[in-house]
Image (cartoon, rainbow, N blue to C red; front, side, top):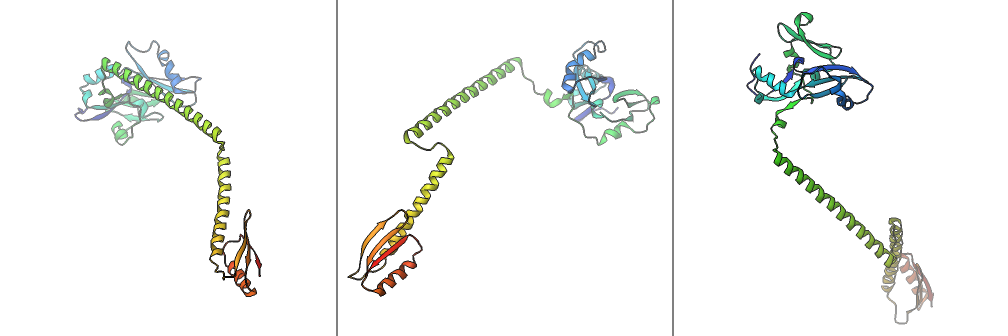
Length: 286
């Protein structure tokens, strides 16, 4: 009975809408919503009605029908300014699935009969629980039928047409961009295939990995040989000593060296034994 003077949410009791429980051999609520006008055939007054459907069990549904314009008009008659209303809910959706018996005032109350919420005389209800207490800390669902925020978004017909053309234009640009990207992708693919064909390159990542591993092995062997040559060259030969032959085989170096004494041969081989590489074979000629 208190006037609304600030932003508020409203929960409408059943006298503001029509509710019906039905059993249908369908699996989804949206299927029932399509049939809703025929389910209320002959029951509703003239006007534009909207519908909400709630699934109770496998084939049981509760269907509500409401006319938002009539609801706003009735609220106006009750002295409730729609400007202070943020969202409007139905008590049917907010107490769905609960067997309730609530006292609204000294003469009327709300009771759930077979899942359908009914507004009736308090004489038929044996309860001292006030509706105000039940909704005080209640978390509201997302089943509102009116939102001020959405109502404030108004688009004139000319603006709507312009918006539609903008959306169509953006979609067209996006499609053209996709087609262009697809063509570019195909062009790059053809260029890649042509490049591979001309240069006889491998086509798969497995082939590339195999080639890389093979090249790494070759590179390591070549580095080992270079290190060996560098190491051998650091050995100081006497005037009458010399390298007679150096042969590069697949994975080693064969040296033939002329030394002037057995002691020099021992020194040379000892020097070679310190070499970290293992790619050297030596033949000494005294």
